[in-house]
Length: 463
Image (cartoon, rainbow, N blue to C red; front, side, top):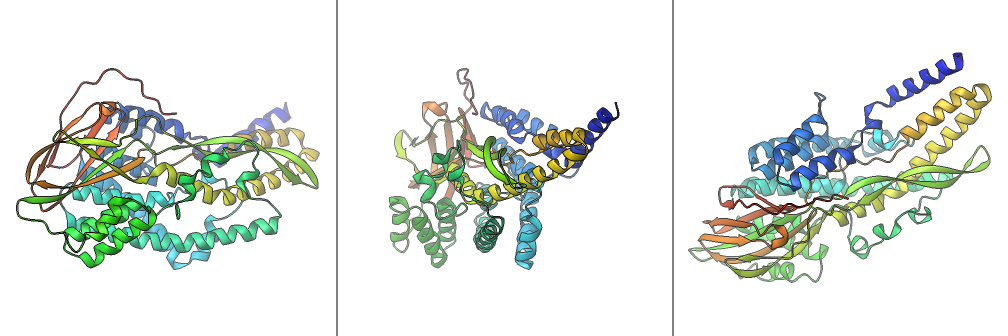
């Protein structure tokens, strides 16, 4: 009886120490939220988000998701408020790493804490896309000066990220060598290596620089008459996505371009789909524990693509077809982020397993029941971190046109419900942003109006 009581007490104690963060299934939570969003029920999606985040102190992901949901609803002020709260968290991270990068890495790079217990600080591409999305909110209200501020912040953030990641990767290489561990994801038998070695992923310079963000920067600077700043934006975008005519022409025509009275230079932005999920996959890994080679089941994150939305490649402007150019893929960026992170993830997971195995062996010699309890609790706790910004748009596509000021209509393909969007063009430079999820079309700002439609019943799949 005493051993049973001890077993139960140990299980309860370990689960209490790990806290609800260990037991939280973020992937499942956001799948429910995303399904409501993909059917156009934004209020239900917001209600689900609130129900899963009842603690008084909200985390970064809550503000990420809330900002995107409110933006879809058309509440630009609410969206911007949520994202400002998120941005303040990211700014704290920036200050921490700039003040003492080595101290930050030693504090948050420890090998002994499960990734799910770490404070979520956002993936690098999420930090950059946050300020890009905030700029789009401001441009929906023709606030180019405000968008300029967010764009400058984006450039500064990229520089901070580049410095800290260079040091972090070097640190993990040194630690892996000290521990005598292999940290190549290609050594994981059964792991979907092809998803991380996809040409679309490998050709990315890194996981956080976006051709769309830099092209948008060029457009904003050009609209404000700062062509000297616009050129580097267009040039960087072309560097990140080479052989893209839209990007090459933006730079070539910059000095020659002039907008005549009664005309507008219009950038049409279509963001479609949802960012991929992270799921946990168990893989047996041979580890040396107390001098013995043991095949140990460990959990590693994998990327699971969103299938809620069919791809968009064109739309119709006043009944004439208009091709769209892809400038950003969150799927590719998230897979590149995971590809770069895997050495650190493998190192941390392996070291924890080795220490846990050695401890369990010693405990088993003294108290088999306690060792069993520790083993069970460890299996519950040692799960891959599946947190990620799920409502972030997956693909960002653009078209740039010269239009006469006045009323125009944009029509999306039937796969996106054949949505009709009325647009009022009344500025020399203007940005029109559309959000497509499932068969729903969302847009914000006084210049756009989405015509309501009743689509045929459809099943939304978020696999």
